[in-house]
Image 1: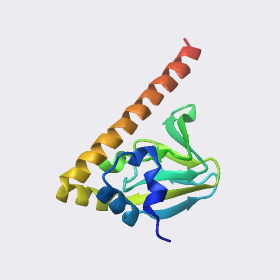
Image 2: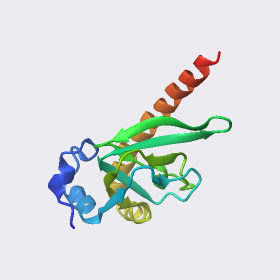
Image 3: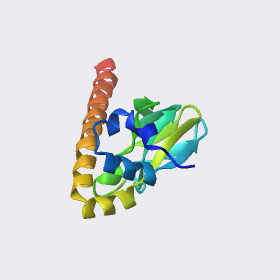
Image 4: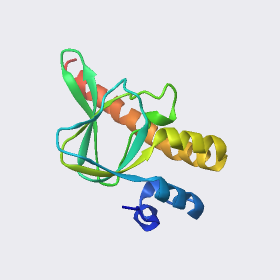
Length: 153
């Protein structure tokens, strides 16, 4: 089923995006579904897609020896999941697990990297938008680490 431009246009990630690029994202998206408790990806695995969560919740986790998976962030409807596909070495930096049945729009990261090389306007928009997500994820990790180590100080 095709994903309409209007479905994407209202999302903050696509806010103020050139209509031509919005059309590109609409045409290149696919539907993805994950049942509750399914691992969406694991740290260290090849990163080749990103998701826009439509419904459900996903735990972004960091494995800690002796403690197991630490939830760094929980993402849900309207959030973007996965940025490692954009930055070498294109490996996942966290685990992601569906906490609930989750529906998403998915984009092929390999295809997007190739298109961004050919269309620098697209590449610039991707870097601008994903840099914000990286900073948010790093800030969430920092806060989680302060919480974990603050309890045991």
